[in-house]
Image (cartoon, rainbow, N blue to C red):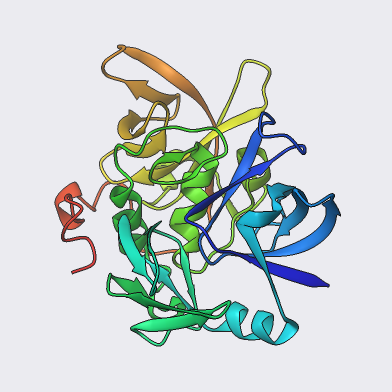
Length: 283
């Protein structure tokens, strides 16, 4: 197998070998992919190693890595947890976003492809982020007001399953890429009244297909992505939009991917128990 690493802030992953093709996902800086095929000098077919998503990227937006580098980078890395933060090398400054990976990071710097990079923002090693409800909700709120973008996974553009995937990825839980794939993961919750904050709620379209997903919050609310990452009310019927004065998404099922917490029902954790501004989230 051959592997590569994304060396720029955000790389579109496309359905076919065309810049006009549908964006099916994105790579963030430092994420590792398996190289499946190349087409000329311009395009490379890749498989994202964290969710098995397959697509095409511009060959010059990824850098092949050796088998030794692959072994190191897949085990030793840190996540950027700032919304945006500059990554500095001798010749350039590059903005990276929350969820980007810092390969072989020592707490201040790392080396890759002959360059030395310095990073002074907030970073966390995966083993230091526990998969708790509180952590997931803090991460989710960090994305508030990020605009919707089909196939997006960054704060500059993100879709509903990309949002749930990133929030859970940052606590070490792997979700697949689309809502109709994610619905098959986790443990089924029979009734929304039995759900807890951090559970995933899935919604169906008129054809009965899973078309949307969001993360349950305390006080009968949900954080999800429509035109942007936002908070709405939810009940057993679905998502209710106060501005439109109507239900916008029909509930299908609730799944639990986080460890159960006996004290964490949707009725006994209030919004004030989680950070509400983006500055103090990880303080």
